[in-house]
Amino acid sequence: MTGENGVLRAHTRVFDGRSDRDRRRSRAYRIVAALAGGVLALAGALGAMIPAAAAPTVTYADAISGLVLSTDSGSGELGQWNTVHISGKWAVPDGAQAGETFGMTLPAEFSRQAAGDFEIADPETGAVLANCHVSAGQGPDVVCTLTSEVAGLEEVGGTFWMQARASQSTSSETVSFDLGDTIEIVDLPGSGGIVPESPAEQEEPYKYGGATATDGLLKWTVGVPSGHVDGGAFTIADTLDGGLDDHHYTGEMILRQSRVQDGARTGEWTSVDPARYEMDFADDGLSFRLAARGLPTSGYAYELIYYTQADGAVDEGDVFGNHAIVNTIETKATYTVRETGGGDGSGVMYTDFSITKVLTGAQAAAVRDAEYTIRYVVKGSDAPATTVTVPVGQAVRSARAPLGSTFVIEEIDLPVIDGVEWGDWSITGDGVVDAGDGTYEVTPGTSAGVVLTLTNIANVVPTPTPTPTPTPTPTPTPTPTPTPTPVPVPAPSPTATPTPTATPTPSATPTVTPVPTMTPVSKPSVTPAAPTGGELAITGGDSGLSLLPIAGVLLIGGAIAAGVSVKRRAGASRR
Image (cartoon, rainbow, N blue to C red; front, side, top):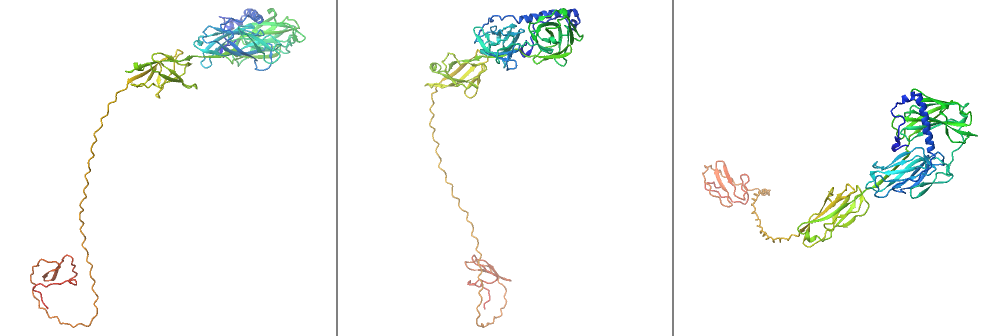
């Protein structure tokens, strides 16, 4: 029997207060232990034949449903002594409390060699919602007890599975589970019901092992077919396998026999007188040897049952093994620790918020009877928004949402009332956050929800002060920009174009008039008179003539331009 994660759960210890080595070294103790072990094993075998008890009394009958059976391999027929896998659903009503129970009774065809326990836990949180106990024997009861983890949860339920042994054969294709108030008929896997164990005796020695109800205590069986009993005697040498998980012999064992006829077992297993065999354990505790003698020479098959104890904690997946030599033939077996039951479950815890309208401001009394409305959604939900009217001073509760949900709330459609000017509105309460977009968010921390307050400020509409008409500022007449008097640009003095000298036309040879010889005279001193227009002022000197320009007249060399008269001043020579 194992619990969560395949850990074999502790119930009792066989040899409290003594070391294993002390026990192994005490031959007398080993013989007593063998006898005691025989009694224990026989009691277990007889316990498996006890008829099933009535259905257990539980708080919630019919909490289990949807049962399905399968073989340990998942397919094929179910044979007698094969392991059967049982799975189903479970659910308890809202308001279920810690300590309350639900369960069922297995069919009479199924049994448990030992009682066992398993847990039903929430796969997300790991919280254990129920502890289940399976009784030993034929048609065992299963009773699951709720824990405090269900407090405040609704829709509590889940699935479970467990193992049992198909210990009785049947030709029926179905078996019956007692769920409390109802009987559920369930199909057996494969066809042909539970196929009876073959009575044929095995030809060769065999070995197998399995768990018991005690933490880490393993049960091993070595089979000796009747054909391997030589003159009423045989030997078994057993050794623990190295390289696997560590365990040691406890010293408990029993040898039993069954009648065989024509190659088939015809009787039940019964204990052999311990005087017919003896055991000897090696000093290292890793092996033992059994020698049986004085047995019937034929007609019986034998099985040796003994136990080992794991040296440490046992976890799912641990592997233990040993091998035996029957006379000269070796047989071996291993046992892998696996869970024999388990389940999962969950529930939903809901929460909500309540909200109350509060008015402040000078016009609060005037707007008390108006209608106010909020709209909210559950963040991340596909559900449409919910609109709720919130009267002044009266709390209104929202719809419920799973605990951990975030409500997004906003006020909409504030009433338009003459003489009222609304100020900013706000929502306050434990954990409220202003989302900054006109909405507020809150995530209640418990199933009790959260209390919110919606506050509005009703102000008086202010009387508008008329704005005086501003006196217009005259636009100044622009002063014309005076036109600047142009600065006269002096006309350039024209450059006189020289008159070309005419080419003289040949004429008759002129008569030459002799020029009289001029008697030089001294140059008078002349004071020039003011020139008049069109005249040239001439001054005399030793060197000849000097010309003063008169505007508009150009003198070239010492000649006077054509067409200009020259007056000789007093004192000049005449021709």
